[in-house]
Length: 144
Image: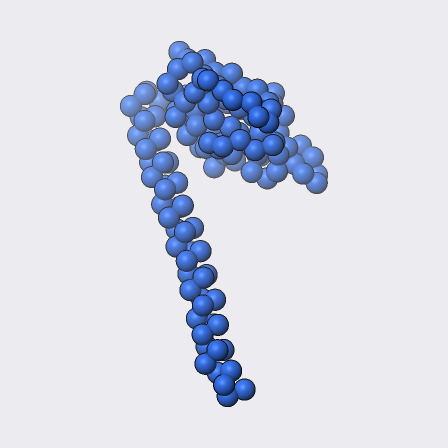
């Protein structure tokens, strides 16, 4: 059984162990990230299960398990203790075997890639729409 450590990230700090970051403020609290931001926690582990932790955390975020622990009315946030509690419950209560977990990780990873691809396509469509509107008014501007 591997162990992990969760700490508050300090700007400028580097980590030698495998790690990822978890957003701690805002409505996206609990979202795992590869790059740090000012309001995040860092998860480090000695094992190579960092990918499993990352996608487990992503699953918890998608499943809205962190929302129950959000505090604050203007800028909601999650405390490190509550975040740790959610992760601990998910990690130690998992009943699936390693093979099933890897299948779930692959599926979630594919869904994330598809979502990113769709976001890029939507952004390209927005730019195309603006370019089309500009060209319509440019052609009609001679008549105006």
